[in-house]
Length: 146
Image (cartoon, rainbow, N blue to C red; front, side, top):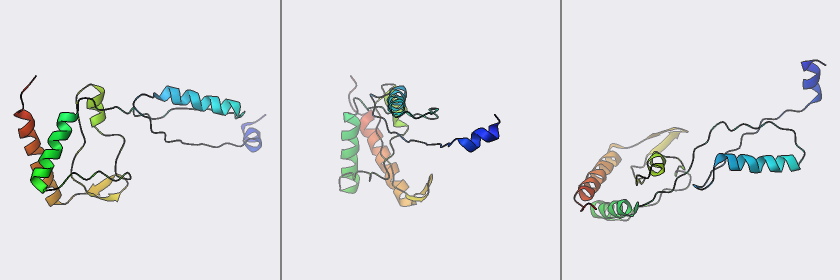
């Protein structure tokens, strides 16, 4: 039997699945569940995990959240607006800090998406962010330690 005859007799399909995992779930658990479903269905398959980013829950972030909310209200006279779901990424650098037990939150200037991985941000938005970060740093650094 030649490779050509095998290719002519079989159907091949590549499927890529994007699965978003909550902090408590690991990629191998999801892989196991998918294997069980495919096995029950009698599907012949090969499966590889080609990329996985673990989610992490921020712990002890309340002081940072309250600081950001107060600084934003003070500077701009309004409450922080939540990011729309299509703009809120599940993976950010905060995950690295939170994984290590370092409290971290995500807050920053909003830009305009100009392609899948690029955006542009107005200078005024960058200035607003710089003021917010400076006021937050001043506030956090003047809090009692303990």
